[in-house]
Image (cartoon, rainbow, N blue to C red; front, side, top):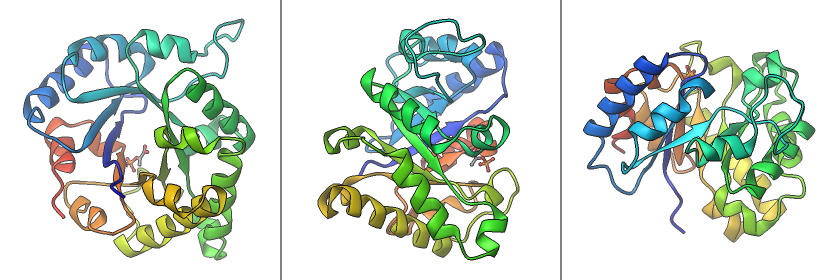
Length: 252
Ligand code: PEP
């Protein structure tokens, strides 16, 4: 079964409108010939509209970095799925470790967000990953399996074609310490095994499992060469057009 290959940039809290538009203008031009790979940029909320407008008619999709699981309401400071769709998003990152760590997002809350995203037709990327301490204690497989199972609770099999999982070991995010290709592959196999238990082997084989954590032009080829690694979620290296373009053009 062929899996989607997704190369996504998580811009976090970087870039003004002018900087964002300049970055995507360059990406649009340099990546116009890329086929068979899904390219996604996830800018901050404030620049989504301008970015989506600049990317109209291109092969680059736009996603949110988060959402609040309600259509509208008295939730000061939050952004709804309807608003993300309105500004041109097709995808959304959910359960990023920075959200879990700094904003106390639980697996249950992430699961609620996932359900609402799917309800509104936004394709979610569910992020999971262990801390350095958990890995040190040898608990990485248990921790990640639990995040996958709780995050996907009550998500029906038919919705899974729109869900991607990103394995992002917390110790590798923004630290320059990438997981080795073998470590990434091993954990992706664990996740695929979880999916197999939840939905059966055939469906599990079709889910895109991305790796995230200090992906750079210099390590992307080795990571993407692993049989279980189907894509990359890129933070720092997605803020520069040349470096993200090289990542999108990985060779394996
Ligand atoms: C991320 O933000 O999801 C990420 C993986 O960041 P970085 O590539 O900078 O480690």
